[in-house]
Length: 399
Image 1 (cartoon, rainbow, N blue to C red):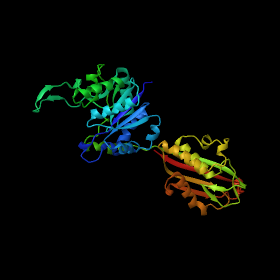
Image 2 (cartoon, rainbow, N blue to C red; image 1 turned 180 degrees about the vertical axis):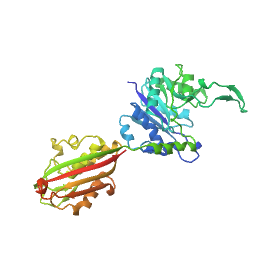
Image 3 (cartoon, one colour; image 1 turned 30 degrees about the vertical axis):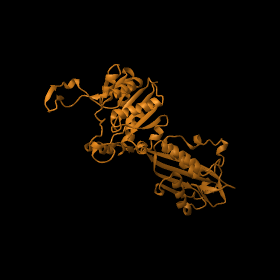
Image 4 (cartoon, rainbow, N blue to C red; image 1 turned 135 degrees about the vertical axis):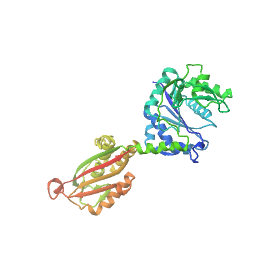
């Protein structure tokens, strides 16, 4: 498979926005304008390098913006992320990024896609279409036919040429190129003394290869340039819908002498406790299974096989923390957690507040998101005879 790199240009000053803020760092969706622009590429194709250009002394700000979306670190786990200071204009910034890729030994035959950090609405389909065309042709760019009739004018504003709309195109990003000839074309452009605002112009003038192939663009792939463009961010926020998953967990442990009764990470005074391979905390085990089920990541047995000696007498709070960290990496957040403890003795109510606080602390959430209730077995069955403790847990996750 052809190696692929992505360059996201975000080194401009955003002066035309007129708000005194950098547009790529503005909040959008679950992250920022920059994170949403980069995320589409990570979801579309395998990427070896992701290069972010930023203004001087703004690497930390660029990093915060890129990883503002909690899903980004998981998406980047197979991608090397490089932050590099850009230049005084777009051409210089792209060349800085290409030099960073060269220093990182990116394949000469690889494909590099250059995208504006202020285009957060780029689609997976557009990225795939452009990358494929670049592999076949050497260079590709998405383009749209202009809506209005185009004219060429002179410095006095007079029309000097009437252009045919059908033969014109308004180009977008990403623009994709075979790496080595693109790098060499940029070197020649730098030494030419000319000014270029578009990478396809540099490719077509200096690469010596086939001219850039156009592919169908996307009207939604707008670039945020002026304050009026921010309306698109508001519309996008209205249209986005969170993904909601529920999970159900269950556990049952016999109560035996010589063991501590641990529920939700809290040791409750009693003459008997849960028998189990770990510390037997049935409540945390049920919660762990509920969370794993909601996230689609398996169950507690697959994570911590009971036949493995290293989990003998393990602290269930530590096991839950491990699982929850993996779930968070997948971008999930807890909406609420509800559990039911079926236990004859001892009375659970005096310990409920402490147990809820303990679970909330383990998960790093607010106590209002956690609730635990309990009922006795009314002297019926193994619960009613005081032989076991049974727990049901349900949760709601969103991303």
